[in-house]
Image (tube, rainbow, N blue to C red):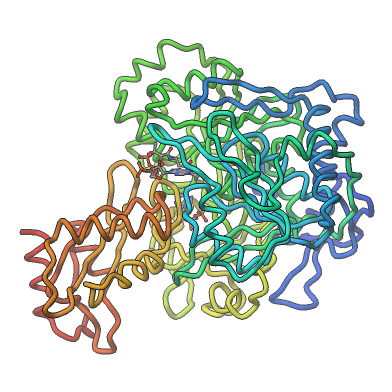
Length: 626
Ligand code: COA
Ligand code: AMP
């Protein structure tokens, strides 16, 4: 039996043994004697009798082991042309002092702290500082506008908001303070503390807002806080992600399972250990950033590169190769859309020839399917394994991967390879029965999920059950459809719900629809995700006007685009609006979104038997396909 098969079988058949062994790589204040608590199934808890501190695992343990001088974090900003380096000792010092700032404001274990920050080191410092005092952070991506921030504040009910004067996007600055002020105004929760990191490039003055603290001033007088030991089952963070409705889902991650799973993943999936330089080109606002910019690389004592910039245009398509070469990156993790952007700008990889990237051993991709074309291009220009792996905010780490550290496997283009030990992945038909190899269906995971996966949704057990557990008894519903081939390789083809994936960002068409529908001229609308060569998908809106409304198409489009930008954020990249006479529906009134998408994407489609009026569909097809 190969090492992969052995690990997979052991994780399935001797769960306790497998995960208690993996847990030995973590520093505990109370080591676990048990792995899984299934007494309240289907709500599982990992390492129920253990305690630890996550920031100690990321920082203190390395300093105490004599590695304080080792490089922990390299911040490389293509936006301001600066590089800042932190050793483990320096990062520990910053984190302990910021934890002291939070503690001095009365923030304590279990309190929630919203972190709304761009890609600057202080974002990681704030996350780790929360972990140090047992506070629960909830990072909100900087591309979300005030109402989205407010929705998260309302749900998490934080005692504090940590933010910065702003973020830098190519050609524009994003001022955060007016957005925070507006979010606090519309929110019903009232966090008592707001702390602002002022960036010299973006003047936004915390002192203009009553009671808001300046990060640097607060840090100047701060005394370091000691780590607080928390139960392994206590929440480390809440991360909101898009569901099928407009209301985001607060995915809750625990401390213990998270530390065990991420530590295991670095060695076994990514083949990264202490001293290696690792770079995840994502954003701390996404799960990929939480797990693989901040926590996992630090837990194993590696050096993490935090990059502020884009793959192209900051200044050119050589940006990624420059960062790899400047910092000696061993492995890069990015989204396929970023690789497509580089390819589009530099199809012959002329920029690559300017840099020595001989340190690079692997390119990892996730966030969306790595399409075979992009896979082939990247493999050819880089001449290193290009490894797709599949996961979700909910799981926090890979469900299917090519485990480069455990046992590298042959790569099949279009597949994230095999289920990771701990995940028993299956494909089922609508009736819940498994489908034969090669046949498409809903991808499910047998319960319990492994450590590190979601403990639930923040204060919403009912939604957790309904969203993930009710569809197929004993299984977690991933929301993705796909198949498993006869070699056991998983192929993930796309979402089976109304979630769309735009440039590796997960968005809910429902929330965009809610904004579009609120325009005075709109009677009803549907937003669907259609194919986009660069971003994978993009949202496309179909609008029925109220009778008697007279508005020209371009005015309507620009008003709707501005509205979505204002209420959801630039990240929604909503630009397409088509006025249609009617929307195709089933007899029970459900909009036929899937059929609409097939029409828009020029795919074959069948007219559903439940259709209310086939003529509406025919007219739509004629309008969209000409
Ligand atoms: N704060 C504020 N605005 C942001 C933002 C942030 N953190 N991130 C993106 N935006 C804005 C952009 O400025 C852009 O605004 P615009 O409409 O005014 O131009 C809009 O949101 C869309 O951004 P994006 O999707 O990034 O598109 P782009 O055209 O600027 O860049 C790519 C395209 C492919 C280069 C870019 O999407 C990319 O690097 N993707 C990688 C995705 C990724 O890392 N995903 C994480 C999952 S692994
Ligand atoms: P998020 O929660 O934002 O990480 O988005 C998770 C979703 O992105 C998954 O449910 C998939 O639909 C998609 N996804 C992520 N990684 C992959 C991948 N490697 N292959 C196919 N789809 C992916």
